[in-house]
Image (cartoon, rainbow, N blue to C red):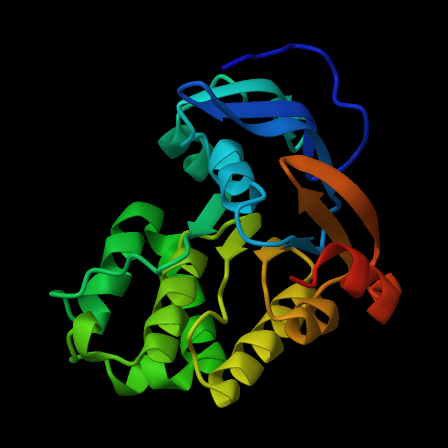
Length: 243
C-alpha cells in the first residue's frame, strides 16, 4: 500500500486519488478518484461486478493489493491497517451484515461498546431511537432476527463506534420495504446531525437517489460518471445502470 505525506487536493472528509486494486493477476480498480465532503451522503452505483465492494474494502484497508492515495480528514491513511482506519473514524457495514448470530442483540452491541467506551454509551439511546426494534429485541439471538432487523442491528452496532464516515454496502438487499423506509429515515436524521458522512453502495436506485446528495457510477473498475443525485435521470440510469 502506498502512503504519501503530500497534502490532499481538497477539504473533503475522504479523498481517494488514482486508486488501483487487484486480486492476484486480476485488476479490479483502475485509477478511481472519489471525494466525500463533510456532512454528506455519497451513493456508489454500478452493475454487479464492477468493483464497488472492492473500492469500499480498499478504503477500509481490507484489500490485499492497492495503489494510490487515500486521505481522511486531510491525512494520508494508505499505509494504515484496517483496524487503525476504524479507530480514526471509519465505520463499515459490509454486504451480508456480519453480525454475531450466536450472540444476543445486546451482546452484539456490547462488542462495539467495549471499543468505543463512554462515547458509545452516549450514542446508544440514539440507536434505539433510530431503530426501536433493536431495543425491543435485546435478549434475542442475532441469528433469529429477520434480514431487515439484522441490517438495523449491523448499522446500529457501527454507529456505536462513533464513526465520522459510515460505509454501507447494499443496506437494502433482501429486506422488506418498511425497513428500507426506516433506514432511509435514519440516514436523513444522521446527516441532519451534521457530524457524519456516509458512502452508500446500493442497487435500489430510488432509495439511493432519495438518500444521497451525490453519486459516482463505476463500470469495469473506473468511475464513468459523477454528479448531484438529482441528476440521476432515466436516461442516465438506462445508459449506465440497467442490465
